[in-house]
Amino acid sequence: MTGIPPHSPDSFRIGCPVWACEHWRGSLYRSNAPRDAWLQQYSSVFKTVECNSTFYALPAIDTVRRWACSVAPEFRFSLKVPRRITHDLRLVNATEPLQLFIEAAEALLERNTLGPSFLQLPPNFSAAESKALEVLLQALPQHLPWALEVRHADWFDSGPHERWLTQLLTEYSIDWVIFDSRPLYSRPPADDVEAVSQTRKPRTPLRRTVTAKHPFLRLIGRNQLDEVQPWIDEWAPIIAGWLRQGLQPFIFTHAPDDRFAPEFARRLHRQIAAILPEVALLPRFPGEQEAANASRQRSLF
Image 1 (cartoon, one colour):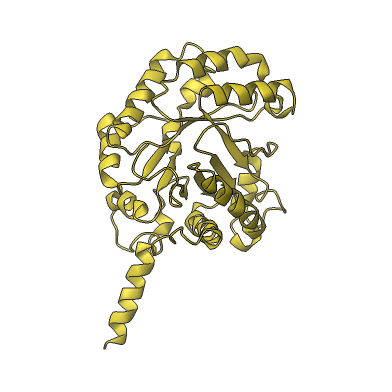
Image 2 (tube, one colour):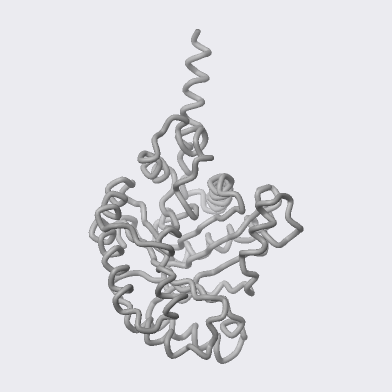
């Protein structure tokens, strides 16, 4: 991936799990912005997004190309590999759906807007299926960036299975998806949305394993962002350290209610910039800028 020098302090990207969120009108998005303007306004602030929608269905190639034409030059999409491959077929005999996914990824690559695509394995995908995993990873085209998220306890055994996986991902330059749900489970749910999220998000052991050049962090927070501050304090210097090493991390901030994800990302980004002053702060959210402009106009009359 090109566009930012590999050792630039701005060589990391932070973003949210979605860009289509109605609740962002008036904050991240202008209050009257049509839906087809959301992606452009999103990319004016953030440099990446998780495309979780591709887990359920692949869009038409023309749609993918429209996405690529809607974003800022330094923006990168991280597509989630379809569940048909990871969950239904469990990586076996997946040549046809994998090729369809690769075509979508390459449509982004053509326009230099492709970030790491990530495979999320089912919770019950254990080391007993390691051969299927190895065969699939060997088949992935190496000109595309990839990441892998595992959830079964075998892969966190601090022993032979974890070492095998670490070596495999390192060999193929595939990033280990670092999944941190500790903030979400740090206290009982404060609302119904957090309660549902605690039934759905896994509590896998935390690993900070780096196996390639794009450390891939999914940080699962809470709706009250002040409660997430201890993990912002913890992760900011780690991410800054990655940047000092010349790595190019992708960081995704999740909240049980998506409406809080952009502010979560901004708080984490601000703390990284405090450690590395050469990192520019995020631009003002378009909806906030709109409100500020309106306030100034009113003050003139």
